[in-house]
Length: 171
View 1 (cartoon, rainbow, N blue to C red):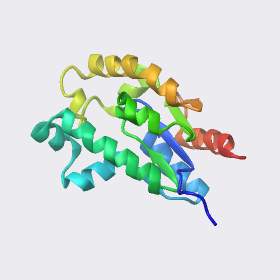
View 2 (spheres, rainbow, N blue to C red):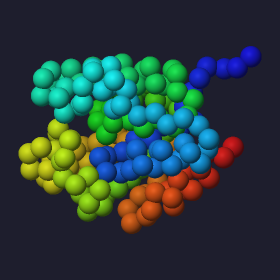
View 3 (cartoon, helix red, strand yellow):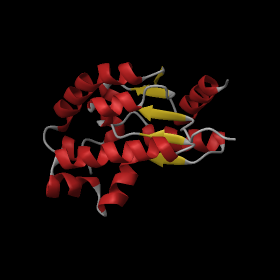
């Protein structure tokens, strides 16, 4: 008898921390599926996230995000990447308890280089650098709260990060 389906690990971090790139690489290295809650939300809503923010607002997006996270935690058996703001909801942080959660840590200069300041990122549309710094400062303690491990991504290739996380996940 098999137990409930659970992600091998859940990746959290700021925009530009590498959740999608590293998550896809890690899933490939482990031979498991990669799933991103942002992609799930777009599928549920039938439109891209920036349009959800414009049409229905951030509160509606966060409601969809809570539903996507709960569904993914119950059905994903691979690597799960969460949107950068998923940790803002206490309900989401509580849902992550007992899971292997890896915080991909990134500092502002690397995040800015990777994100490209706002293309398709609704929360970074106005004054992207200052907004990204604010988001990172606001969320860093929440990432630390849910994380079972933190991996620094600054100045490192996705392959180096994948290797480190794969080693952390070995029993």
